[in-house]
Image (cartoon, rainbow, N blue to C red; front, side, top):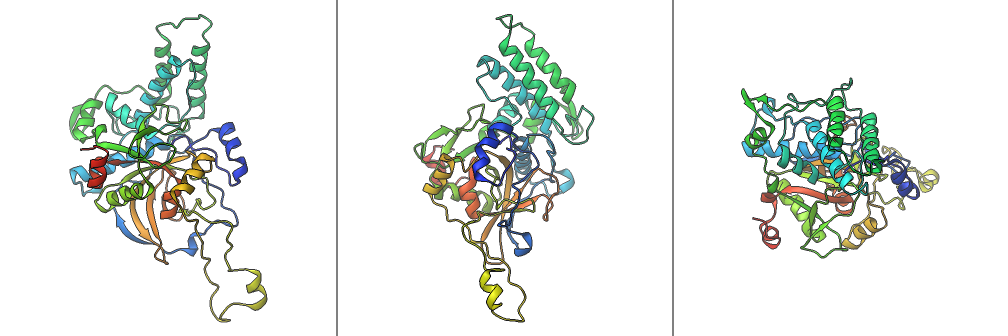
Amino acid sequence: MDEDKHLHNMRTNRIIAAAALALCCVSLAAQPGADAPKTEDFTFTTVKENPITSVKNQYRSGTCWCFSALSFLESEIIKDKKITDESLYPDLSEMFVVRYAYHDRAVKYVRLNGHLNFAAGSGFGDVLEVIRNYGIASQDAYSGMNYGTDLPVQGELDAVLRGYVQAVVKNPNRQLTPVWLKGFDGILDAYLGEVPETFTAEGKTVSPEQYRDALGINPDDYVNISSYTHHPFWTQFVIEVEDNWRWSPCWNLPLDDFMRVIDNAVENGYTVLWGGDVSEVGFTRDGLAILVDTTVKATSGSDEERWVGKAEDDAPAPKKEWKELEVTQESRQDMFDRKLSTDDHGMHLYGTAKDQNGTKYYLIKNSWGESGKYEGIWYMSENFVKAKTLNFVVNKKALPKDIAKKIGVK
């Protein structure tokens, strides 16, 4: 997720925009046009809602992958430790993860002579590997805001780091010095601050590794899942997106089972770490994500209504009814193959709802601050999830038993 591409409405510009800008996870959604649904046309009723921490703001940084993943892990901690007092909810440090992820990526980039995507975006597997190898810190212990702003503004940092590793790879000396990585870490320390060796949490002095263990975070507890036909089902594959620089594998499930995992997780009190495409006309700034069929026009305001009037002269103007595209395994694959479904954004799925017509939606926590009608929450339709989810991560305990058995997860 991963670095959110600067989003465009027009499909013909998507590939060009992605290559030219490569800005994932910025605080921009697809620009709503005339065909975009409006929140006033919908009334939502929550069906199931699992606990989440407060909405955060990644602001001007390509770090949705980290904000969403830590939100997901915070909900995991809340569930595991049965925390009911919101004042005791964990608040994990995004920039702790970002710092070490950049360190690891620099090493791999140099080893591969620059043949690796080096940018702010990343994947969910990155977060789990950082926590596995380095632990985690609380937000209080490490804010990573060492360069003079209250919210992340990382364009300069990203450019400096990229320029540094590119210079190391070009290396006029023809051999690396033993200090190039120390210099790279020095840049990270200057912008984000030095990582503390220990800090205080719940009245105890702990290291990042000890804090990870005290929170009960085990990266081996999580499975990454996708659903595409260009790889065999019920096997693992590395999803082919540039932000998956660690080459983290995912399990490939048929679409019905893919969706069944999400529903089983939510119904059993778990949340889901969601990654996918948000560059659709139906993904709006105001909290909606609907797979709009733009070939079908709503009748409200139609030429028919213009000439013959409403069905009932005294009736209020009808709400628009938005027809969604139907999703199949084949149509989902076609969208991925033709780059109509792209690796844009990571968010946190934590519940379900229904609209006024009984259509199913998922509750999604975003990382763009308390924006939109629902203050940082999006309502994402079931069809949107089916079509536009590239992959998701879930606790292995949230898998239906038959699926867990089939993929050998215990």
